[in-house]
Image 1 (cartoon, rainbow, N blue to C red):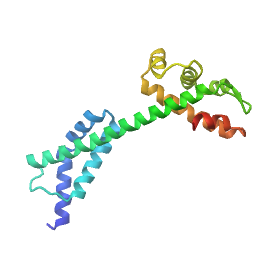
Image 2: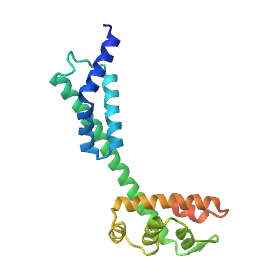
Image 3: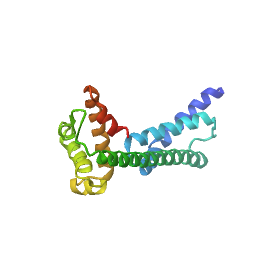
Image 4: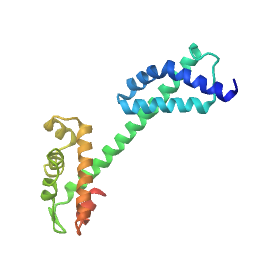
Length: 181
């Protein structure tokens, strides 16, 4: 068997033996089906790129090597997601503060209450509580009975909807200023 076929056979054996266990490890770290599947795929890609081949795919050394790869890939993805969530949280807090500091409810002919009321109800409630009633993300989460990340995500989606709406309006400068501050 030539080297290329030997590598392919080794990867296939590893996949057959360890794919489910690697998925379990990734899921225990990431708690997300899609991200866990992606982590397993990335781990096998790393294995292929490394060119490392063990004599026996079922050996304990091979098993430890693969479990180390999936653990590291999963932890890297977890840390990246955490950093991204923190960045989004900080950006959202700044945006909320800027929106609150805009005391003119009607600028360029766009009434903010009208913009909020045009949103689907679950998004409108979040925006209203954050911007109009000046509540914190935590207070909104408690009042609506949802998690803080859910409040931030709904606010982010509402901003996108409002931005799209303002872009359709000739005088979209008001919403542009709120969203991009």
